[in-house]
Length: 226
Image (cartoon, rainbow, N blue to C red):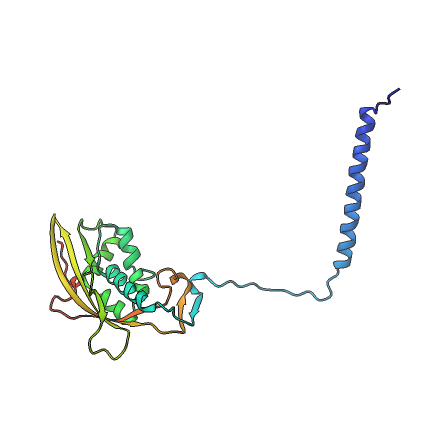
């Protein structure tokens, strides 16, 4: 005859097993705590974090293709400095005086000259006062073969002559001029950059001289809208 365990008896066994397991675990925990305490010599530790924007990275060696990188760096800098659009967010990202791209890539004197131009003052004032920017655009285009060349008569390898075309569209009309500028870079090994600038300026290069070589002057110093 097959014996059958009654449900109340089965539940009693299950509860007994669970209770026994819990008691064993509790005993092990108590023994562990007893061995840990009391602490022989309490110590207090303070953890201090450094904000990411204040963290600095030291560059100890430049890559082998540094000259190619410098050429592209100069082109991107000239575009960021001179190109204009009615997109306030894009202009704010490029031209603001805290972490803007031009500010990040410029030496102090170059930035001071740039931020003193009529165009910079007009655009940044409009953005600050939430005024819509004028509906005109200015684009930088480079000739294919001689846009960035070594600067004649330079005593250092980090001076360049840059040629570019500047095309502005205002009220459906396009105005074009060509410009020649002299650019000097600060590009040495063992440099330090801020962690927050690692994407915009991974090698820590800065423009420390920016001068116009022709009679056209700086296009940003001429307010071209009413």
